[in-house]
Length: 216
Image 1 (cartoon, rainbow, N blue to C red):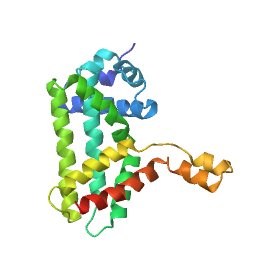
Image 2 (cartoon, one colour):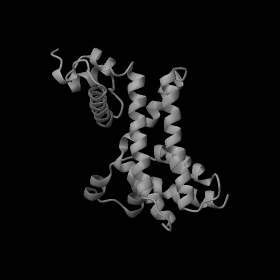
Image 3 (cartoon, rainbow, N blue to C red):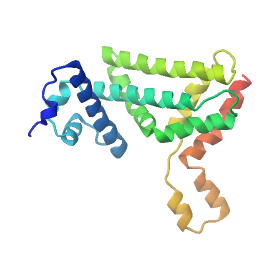
Image 4 (tube, rainbow, N blue to C red):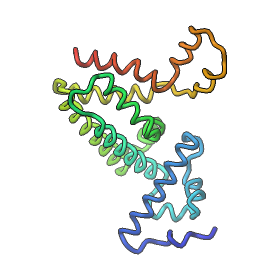
């Protein structure tokens, strides 16, 4: 394989950072396209037009690449979500802001089960431990800000955000738009099918969670 000239061994920190970003961009695109089914260093390298050894100049292994990517995706998710939260917003608007951000950043939801497996298998590695800590800090910082803006009781913000992340990952995702538009279904059947819509499934549980946490 001919190695891309712009991916020769980096000569400066700036070049090194740019190459890492390029690798992460391709890795994220691959995760979104395959839903984690064919994610490997070899596939990332092939998509990028470099050798596997070039990837290993920047990431020690597949696990480090994945955890670094998940940290980046999580940071972008929580920063965007917080930009949409403001004082005085209704619980419904808050729930919608969360799930709409999740729709905008599908990598955060899709990667979480994969990352949990990586953590279980490699937690003793320093880079895994550091990544888990960094992700936790992003989440808790967002939760504390949510607590302040929504005027929740101490500790409720962290419980709320943690519960929302778990609910988001557990919500069933199904693309049913075409089915509902083309099939003649009874109203009861249509309502049943709609219950499997990812966004609606999340919202139906999220508002109940907020009520429960506010009154706990």
